[in-house]
Length: 92
Image 1 (cartoon, one colour):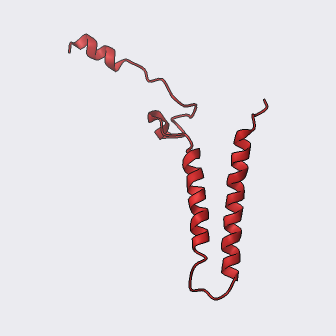
Image 2 (image 1 turned 30 degrees about the vertical axis):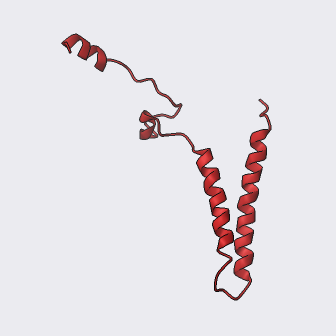
Image 3 (image 1 turned 90 degrees about the vertical axis):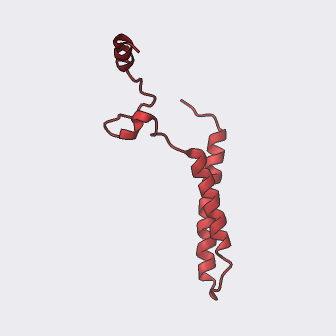
């Protein structure tokens, strides 16, 4: 490689791929500044399943069951709401 081609390669400017400032989020420079909506949805449904499986246990009272089912229903409700909102077109 000649000196000219080395200088040209080092003078290439990086075009930002996101609208996030690299001063605020240093990892935005290499493209890691977005959200993971699909991962969040999967984690939500896994959490609902884990909460419902936790009902099976050695506890004798039903208060624990009520809290577990309540939290599972609340998270499932938020996930279903998210599904419904994604289907509707957004108004500008």
